Every structure is written in structure tokens, then in C-alpha cells.
Length: 293
Image (cartoon, rainbow, N blue to C red; front, side):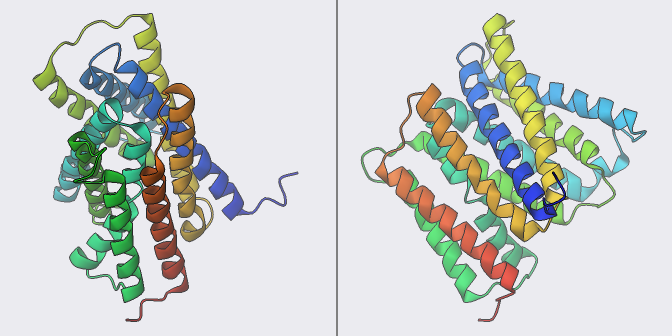
């Protein structure tokens, strides 16, 4: 039955599963933040997830804390990871979930621009135009100066910038680290980000059963999403699998409507469509190798 399933199709299915996992994780974070401070949710999730990956690393006879963690490239990556996790988690807890996830979809566009400006990668005028249009989509979602604008939505922009910086720093990071070790580092940074938030807000307390269950659910689906994402990027062609990252926006909007009674308005839908279309276009151009000016 599985002989006809190509690596690209399997990779696309894994990427879709990963995005569904992350969308459900976001929902659980939002729900859990009503029971305990969001910083506490982040800290428990982060250090809990790091512990799971540490056990997996030990089972695979890998170092739980390799010296490469302290290399300059990984320290820069960790700093961006903390910023991304911190601001994105705050945005999920405090603002509209569809708006936050829509803005996150611009991350590949920022990475593309950063790769050209920092690493000197060739980017033709068509892809630069797509980046500009994608940022226009972000502005439509944010709608600065118009009714419906919320300064809190800038948290999502800061989170998106942090994740873009992390992805760029990853390009310069050593390739000797396993996915389990990257998981230890990534989830540890989420835990540290949570402690930073708690240092300002305070209020940590022992959660009730519902709160504990929601935190466990967020951690479980976060781990599921991370593992599925890792498997997806190792299955099939990157250019064929990556576009399915955008399914996260679909899942987020559906979950927000069903469980949070948050319905994205026309501007949010329009901006989201522009961001996704711009991102897909850059992937198509990259696949064709069209970088001529």
C-alpha cells in the first residue's frame, strides 16, 4: 500500500502534521495562560521538552550538553531563539491567534532578505519584489493607523524577527549536532524565555488540574510538531516540502474560530493570502534557479 508514496508526498504529510501540532500547541498555550502566568507555561514547557530530548539523546549515546552549545554561532542562535520564543508566546497568549500566526508566515521572507544582505546570496529582482509584497501583507494584517490596530500585535512581529534571526544563525552553526541536541537547546531557550517573563510578571503558582493538563498538552504537541518537522525536512526535496509550512495558518484559523471564537476579519484574510502567496512565489523562483536580475 505504501509503495506508491513518494518521498516528497511523505515529507509533505509530515510537514502538514508538524504544522497541525504547532497550531494545537499554540491553542493549548493560549488556554493554559488563563490558569497560570504565560511565563510559567513557557518555562514548564521548555524545560520539560528539553528533558525529553535529553533522555532521547542519552538513549542514543549522545552528549546532553556538547561543547558546541557554547560556540559563538550557537550562542547567537540561542539569543535569537529566546527572543523569538519570548515574543511569539506572549503574542499567542495576549493577542489574536490568527493574526499572530499570519505574521509568523513572513519568517521565510525575512530569512531570504537576511541571506542576501548578510551571506551575500543572490536574490533576483522578482524575489525581492515578492519580499516587498509580503511585507505589505504584514502591514495589512497589522493595519497601523487604522481602526483595529493593536500595539500588542507588534509582539508577533518581534517574535517573527527572532525566529528569522535564529534560522539565519543556524546556517552558520556547526553541522555536527543531532536533532535531539538541537531539541535540547531549543526547548531550553523556551524555558529561559519563560523565566525572563516570570521575572517581570511574577505570580507563579501550582496549577490546578485543568492548567496542568493544558501545559502537558502544549508540551506534547510541541514535541510532536518538532519531531514531525525534523522528519519532514529529511524526507523528500526541501523545495517540495517547505510550502506545506503554510498549512499552519489554516489550522490556526480553524482552531481559533472553533475554540476561541476569534474570527479573522477581511483585512487579516487579505494580508494572510498576500504573505502566503509571496512566500510560495519565492520558493518557486528558488526551485527554478531564477536569480537573474
